[in-house]
Length: 44
Image (tube, rainbow, N blue to C red; front, side, top):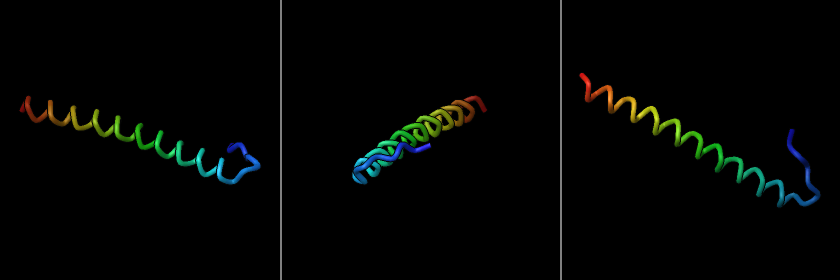
């Protein structure tokens, strides 16, 4: 559930922070996948 605030700007700020947080999580996952792929390529 999203917490509604009286100021709509606060909602926009909150959502943009969440998007940035999600993007950071995706970057970490992508980095892990890339590392696995690189090590796999080196082994074969």
